Image (cartoon, rainbow, N blue to C red; front, side, top):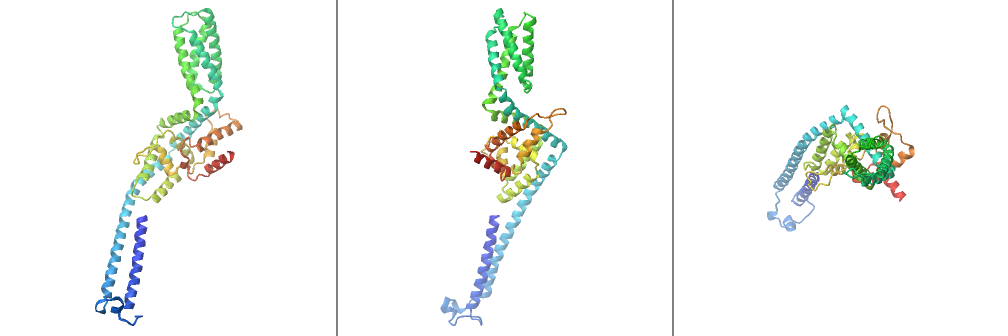
Length: 388
């Protein structure tokens, strides 16, 4: 585009120069319009006091025509490149729009956003509140493990202590599994073994030791969540999206579409911004909400031909039209199944919203540049700067 403007400007200057030269020569040549009395030969040392105006004009006209032909050829070449780009772009864009409008895709977006928010609530809200319970269970499990041995040589005092510890562990587990069902299997095994202590003396202590070891490992994982919640959330959220077969085709098409625009040398940078904007305008806010999380976990690529998903989202400012507050709030209040809603208080929601806003503003999910001129992001940044 810049080359075309330069050539056009050059042609205009050349044309004006030609007209100006023609008028000067016309005035200086011995004609009724001349403004000077002295012979031209004395003023410009022109041989035989003659200037061939006809040949001069022909030469200038030929020069202008040649330059115009070059510019026309350039426009034709650029138009051919644009047509080549448009052909594949339209194919990818139509496929993108077709996928985004299918009922299965729309339903799956809603379900996946709910799963992501469940994951967010669990890691940033539920797990921290149960931290002390996990710690108590971990201590009790290690106490039981230290009392057990594979030779079944357990004294009556040790047996009573193990029984007491197991009962205590079972009570703590029952508090936890109301909100964390991932430990159900381990809890059932330990509760069953605890019950056997009351009705039988034939206890397989080696089997119990193995159950306790598995429980300790599971509890360690839960305690690790408190150390780095954002990394755990990012990892588990990426797994939720990556393992979704219904969303995969759309995410692949979108990546190819963004990469095709970004890498194509047949269009100018200004045109790339226009095409990126066209793609942004067709993506609903709830899909953008999912794409925000799909950007998680992608490493920065040094290969310009194969940029990462997150790099393309940043370059295209794909999240510019994302209504963050609406999507976050709606997914908190949405119905989880036929019988239950999330039971969250206003204070709880406000607290989660603050955590989520910081998660976004701090660039934990993706560089803030991906949001472009998003109005809500600007307000959040202003609010954060005021708070500081």
